[in-house]
Image 1 (tube, rainbow over the protein chains, first blue to last red):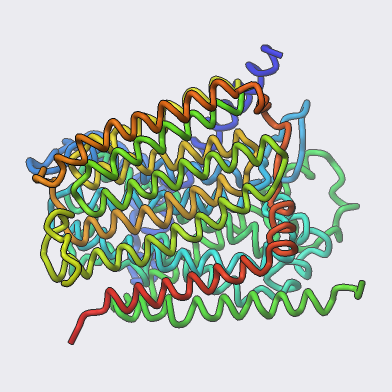
Image 2 (image 1 turned 30 degrees about the vertical axis):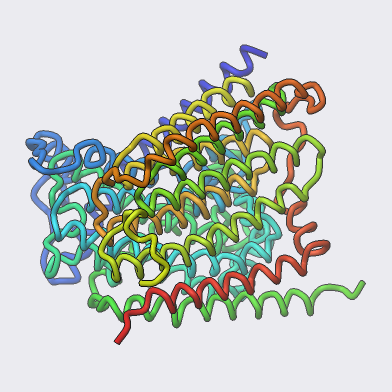
Amino acid sequence: METGLLAFLLINLAKVIVVVVIMLMAVAYTVLLERKLVGRIQNRWGPSRVGPFGLLQPLVDGAKLFLKEDLMPAAVERPLYILAPIIALSCALISIAVVPFGADIRWKGVDLFQISDINIGLLIILGVTSIGVYGIALSGWSSNNKYSLLGSLRASAQVISYELALGLSLIGVVMRAGSLRLRDIVGVQATHGLLSWNFFGGFQFVAFFIYLMAAYAETNRAPFDLPEAESELTAGYHTEYSSMKFAMFFMAEYANMITVGCVATLLFFGGPTSPFGHLFDHVLTGTAAQAVLPIFWFVLKVFFFLFLYIWVRGTLPRFRYDQLMGFGWKFLVPVAIANIVVTGLWMGLRLPVQ
Amino acid sequence: MVPTSYYLVLSAILFSIGVAAFLVKRNIITVFMSIELMLNAVNLTFVAFSRQWHQVSGQIFVFFVMVVAAAEAAVGLAIIIAVFRARNTLNVDQIDLMKL
Amino acid sequence: MHLALFIIFGVFCVAGALNLLLQRHPINSALSLIVVMSSLAVLYLLLGAEFLAAAQVIVYSGAIMVLFTFVIMLLNAGKEERTHGSRLAYIAGFPGAAALLGILTFVFLSRGGDFGQARLGEYIVTTSDLSRVLFRDLLLPFEVTSVLILIAILGAVALARKEH
């Protein structure tokens, strides 16, 4: 019993470390991807000096942020000022723990491609993201700066409003799967490849677009990046932050983007399943192929969502604040509710009469 | 393995602290928060008993308490904002008149 | 294992609640209440109420308390001042609360044998169990609460609107 517990703790610790390291690397290279792509969209090169194609730029950026002086402004509320970036980053990293990023392969009873497989995985992700707003709210309040306070007030109001549309948009998917466990939700979409994905076969594309828009607002990204609108609020809630604390907010934003990409992939695009279903199963039979291909598909889909994020940022102008609130409450929420009703009716009609 | 009575005692401690905070605090928002603390303490009792008697209804009741707490928070905070606009204070001793 | 987790998060709960009582600034009180609520979510998990644990985090810590911090930030509430009215509360309140705690603790501990023990993972209420009861047996109360929420929304909008 005791050795079992110890082994359990050690194995999970190892998994957590591996996933966190991969996640932080992914965050660093998403930043590079964004700088490169936005550069191309604006007809310039983007970072190109450090390493081939600027590939070593994230390392240099990291070193720069580490070595900068950590300024502590005089009139800040010290404990909360320090706590805020920690909350933001840890909440952004926690939600990856329930994401299954590969096939359900077990080695000596250990689930290799998911940290923890729990019944309420989807709710855990929603709960952790809803805690994440404290990082933003507290940073603005404790900075003792009017721009920070305005930015964080905007951010909290925006996140509370769009959380509603986000949650409602996922209900259609949960109704189809009949479970909140992410593996079950993926399993429902695994049968006929692309045709059984919730986006195509499940007719949840309305829900998908609502989710996408609400998630962009939740992560404070363009075109909903009012909390950090640089033309009005200098840098919004992290105006007073410098060095590593600023870097933590920065990493939290990109980690949240990756989480949103993962959730969109899992819920609407079949997660780690192949778009061709079982069509090529007889060609690739080896265990290695069975293990590696799902990860490949998953990473590809998540990459697509990150690309979309950056593409949208590079092309769309920012909303005005009243437009943002009106859009969330008067458009997204009613459409999400309509989607639930239609999905319910459709499922009820398909149900055999008892 | 934990006796259910431990959970009940914990809930009693939280409830008593909630009562004390409700009586002592002077800021109307904090007073409101201590009511939420009392509701949470009661919720813990419900869940502990639901687990004890293997009844789901206890958890359903917690669900309803959460709904009521959410509604209460929305209306209560709106009242607080309205009172603050009229009186420019949050001290409960200065807003004890019934009219604005 | 169960006892250790219970003690850790129980201590978090009590410490958070005491901090709520002792802090002078409302935002610190709000943060300690968030600690209490999140630790309660863990205790719910220990008691096998997994959906409630998630709902506790999403509804209480993630929505209601965000609303509280939002209002504190919006009204820019400063440290609370001690005023005369609190005298009576000090005299009657603390003994009353202490007596309540004493009676409840005495009853629970002396009758503790009637309640039995809670083992980890012995009785887990899944989301589908919960929804089966909620949407079959208790559908009417459920629908009535939705009307309650509607009324609350209307009330909040009517109250918070600026008079012209």
